[in-house]
Image (cartoon, rainbow, N blue to C red; front, side):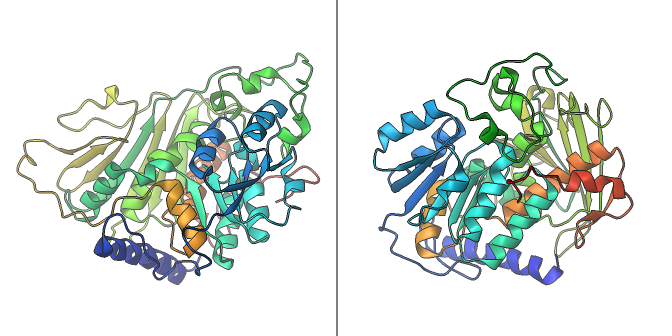
Length: 441
């Protein structure tokens, strides 16, 4: 992407936050970069929900006060349960057919990860607002496509990184950007999660449950027999398979490193390298543990920075005053003057004795009205969203480059303009993917 576009996006986010802070913490206003106004905030949207259980149930609850006009799920039992609650909504097993319904204003997508980008792209191309559960894509190319579709259109979008709306995230961003620990040299994120279940594709045959549309669940993924192992333990099992997700990197780093990307206004890395057990991961599933290292160049007021991801029990070294081995998830900013350690609900400046008299900066990022409510208001008034598909797409694109480096087993020299690893043409098959006929992006 060209530098001017990046600068414009950052300026829009900054102006939005400044304007919101000036008008009051609970008021969100339109500003540069906002979508054009469409209707009154009190008017209800016609919402279609794709994926109505699991994470879909949580997202569903947040939009249930709107007009629910369409329900879609590949599980007939889940669909029947949702239909009882909204009997006037039309029901579908295939989201592609759902888009023939003309009265849909907005779509909430909470399907499995490998269909997120397809549902979202189809909605945007038809002029529908989109809320999509994280990550919005499973390949680097998909993430870029969604960024481009968002920029071309007039639709409100939001990636489901709900913790972005938390007060703690905002305070950490303010600490970093106010220079509390000086220029940031390194930033780390980690999660203890270890992929569960078998490492090889099961060979025994099981009948497809009568309530499940297996072919529709597979969607763009390669054809394979049904097996219950894909559904054991929730997303901890199906999302470790490369055909369906990107394991802990896709499922958790998108939450945890969101804080780092926001605080440091990260753009495109120059190099990416990964280490894992086993090297390159298993042929079909996520490795037992993964570490990734991204190098970012200086831009604006931000110096060059190294960002690292650790999972499966791997963690950065603990700074003075805290034992990170006891933290299941977290981020660590390493600055010239000290450290900031944080997770979803806590933050600390370290060493503690050095910062005991520190006065935090005046809060300038306003409280969120709610992650879903921010999107609903944007759909109705054109106000901006903080996790739109430009910001969220870039976050996912960068994270998934870690997956590419892992699977290619090579340090990548990244060319963001051409979407290629300049030194590693064999990585292209991991940057993009082949889709089953009828399920193309």
